[in-house]
Image: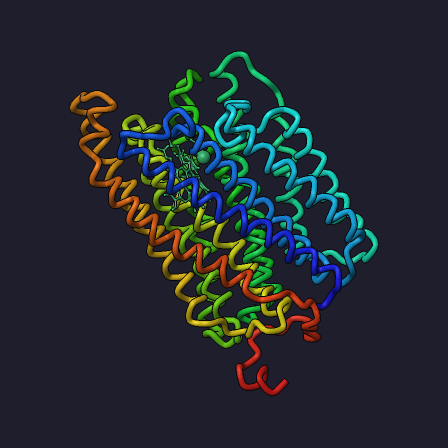
Length: 458
Ligand code: HEM
Ligand code: HEM
Ligand SMILES: [Fe+2]
């Protein structure tokens, strides 16, 4: 930790960890409901569980992005944060917003728009928080006068994410119209500006963990951002196929969204080639696992599994079935959960004196259990989804009859989910077991691939 104000990041990550744990608990509860009969149906039905599960996801990932930014910006701009107080005030408001939104969902107080269910007062608080956040970061950079490409892409992504949240504030009486504009936020977030955030965090981490050349990494970053936008913006139309828009969207949506895996393959290649150059030379091999893992898993979950059902000829069968959460889980976990966990594992040894750089065996267990569990969950949703498409959409069985016939896949989902949850539990335990001391000062600017021996004697 080079700047005192970077300590703020730790508290954002601590909140993110708590919400991550809750998100997974609600996910498991939602999954049990596929098996029925549901004794809690009147108290906490499936839809309420799903709303809480997915909204907690969005909130903890954004908390992680904000924490990561508060860590990265001082280092990249070589200056303390403009206002630490403002950063804590922002976190406080954010937590109050998040917790009260969850309580509200239990009472069905929400906007009803998937993934953006926050009621209007909460949405306004979110906008205020975003403004406080961007102001703080902007002032830090302005005062320091130093601005890197990595930081620019990160802030560009955050700014666009805030901007694209605004359409979700408009209430629509017409459900189709509401759904049309919902994708401006959701699709352009996950397949546009959030990828910029992931890409820049990846560049930040790879430069430090593998000693990769900053200039080379940042050139790659430009290429990736360019490809994301060329493919992702018109690619939005892969959500418009069955929404009543003119037919040419089938072709344009299909074509451009099929190009979307290109930047994701690019990210995986650049992470892997950076790794090959340095091996696991940096002592924090755990962070290297999460960093490279994020790039590779994104290629699988978002790139490959997104491509699998983005063709109109496939999507007409799979749309809105269990094939969607198959892809949603693998993509979200690989791209956004894993990159936040990578940032956390990178900073923890710098914040907690007693936490060694190399991590303990249980840290690696937490990594592999989550990976194996998420892979199993992805396969469970995939097999359930294929069965569902065949029975319900091809043979013509009813929805509930089909659900009964695919129970075995839900059992597999629960087993894999339990494996995954134990990995998450271990990660969270390992996060909180060390007291933050904030006194571990790293003096090397960009340590890069400093050999273990050299670090040990430094
Ligand atoms: C990191 C990037 C990505 C994430 C986090 C992500 C996540 C998601 C999520 C959560 C949904 C469900 C949304 C909802 O119904 O509200 C979804 C739907 C979809 N995604 Fe992605 N996605 C990503 C990238 C991609 C890519 C690159 C493609 C195509 C190559 C793709 C293709 C699709 C399609 C076609 C659907 C609609 C499924 C349906 O018709 O039911 N996604 N994605
Ligand atoms: C033990 C772990 C988990 C379990 C058992 C679980 C279970 C579920 C279930 C049952 C649903 C509802 C699917 C439906 O509509 O039928 C769901 C939705 C979703 N979950 Fe999870 N989940 C878990 C962890 C996660 C994690 C770690 C992430 C992301 C990093 C995630 C992201 C999502 C998303 C994006 C959706 C909405 C997908 C869609 O509507 O297509 N979940 N989850
Ligand atoms: Fe999309």
